[in-house]
Image (cartoon, rainbow, N blue to C red; front, side, top):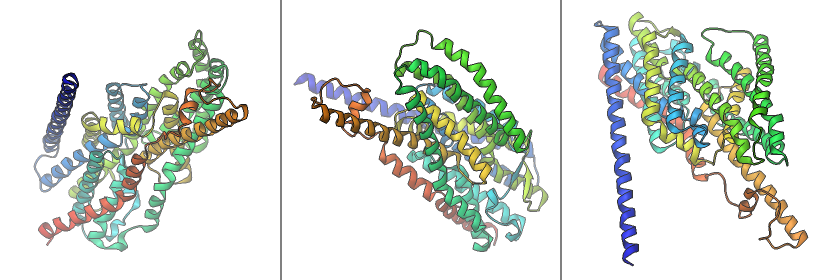
Length: 497
């Protein structure tokens, strides 16, 4: 009795110590984030100097830095979360890779020209003057950053692009009324709430089915891996080469569709010829077990996480610095431009802020995406990464405004629900065989351990996360819009009257 009491007391002490360490780490992260924003202030002040609008631009730069921190804390988790959950990458390794490739993508291949009205949500001609436009953009940027911050705090991966869209829409309505909004574009974005995750989930499930039926369920798994892994890695290489050309390198090079297809085909063939002997060599002496086969997907998965991070940095840095660039341009020129150049110092704030936010606050969402929705292994995580690249390519070709966040998270759910379906199907067949042969359920029948466990109808996807994330997606645009409109109206009462 005394021993049990002592054990309980020790458990309570350990829990208290763990919670104290977590709280301490949170305070450290917040302190470093504030230091980063202070650094942004000093950096922007040294670039801008003194002038008529210098204070306004510095404030906007700080808000842009705050937005970049939140993008790093929330959005980047989708690129590396599955790799961490599958144990292909450690948390620290994932943070290093993502930070380097996100920053490289933003600085080297980030768009040098960005639409100041994100996704054509509002018509700039409807804004009366540059002063109103500046405050509208500042309200939109701050509202989007605050909303992403709230979502990160509750552990929901949301689309930062949609947060910016909602912010711009809300500020535009507050500034010039509902007529300023491009409603057909908004309908397309609303449709993408369903299109993005469903496409990502279906494609990820499709590739997992290929792996299951052609490798995992084969009697000789090693021989099957030697045939199929080079093909899958070659497809991944072709997809990501096209993805990088279309999304990540558009600032440097813009080839036409046929050139992209030709390059992708060349990469596919070359990768297959290179990878095939490597896989064959790695398979020598390999045990005929699922665990052994999974190791063949580890390096391709790490490369996929790095490439996704590079393309994300190149493509989504505008979420942090697009409105900031618009504010800088309008402040300097006194005019409202549909497209503006992004100064290098603005891009640097976005790149460094994304990396800083990833290191300081990213692990929480990385664990959510990679570990808490469904169990990951290198094969499942590989399917998620491949699905993300393919879905973006298809959406780009069709002109659909999809979200990379929704695609990646949808792919994770797709993998999980496919596992539920396939294991339940195999369990039903197993139960049918038991009934036909009248063998006791405890007998040693052929099948994987997963078949025997699923006979209890165990759920392989956490439903609570599905509801939380889906709700966060649906309310992101309206919440960001309401917050932005409120901020703009508050500012206008003090500055514009």
